[in-house]
Image 1 (tube, rainbow, N blue to C red):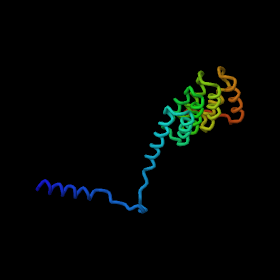
Image 2: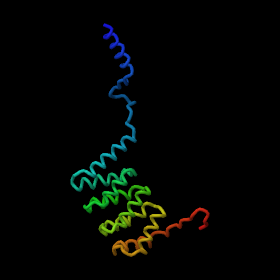
Image 3: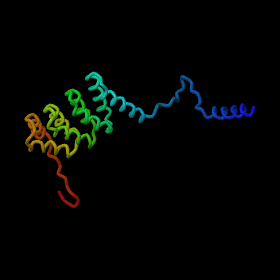
Length: 178
């Protein structure tokens, strides 16, 4: 009898702690936390980008990662930029360029300097680099025009971009005057 009585007391106390029931038309329904949805979107897009799926599905998932503009996806996209499939690699470069972050600029520079990648991919990385809108991105574009060892397509694009872009700002060190 005591056990039954204690069970009724415990369950009665716990039922008071439960969330109140809401009716179907209740206007005060709470939306899930937006940060949780961003995490879920990121994980789903990463899952589809790496999944053994048709190329069109992978490319769409990679472009979605760029639309999310989440800096946590940059490293995964940087790895996909070196994919053997040209469509996947181009989509990854476009997605990285869509994310305004210093790490994205580094990844675009790495793609530009990689000698084993196709000139088409390197030209795309070079043409998207100024959209990072930093002085160091402008310096990278101008530096390519003075270096040898790049394919002709890359050098031609670099010279064309350098003519259209403003001169990069000079870095000043502490205590120096420009």
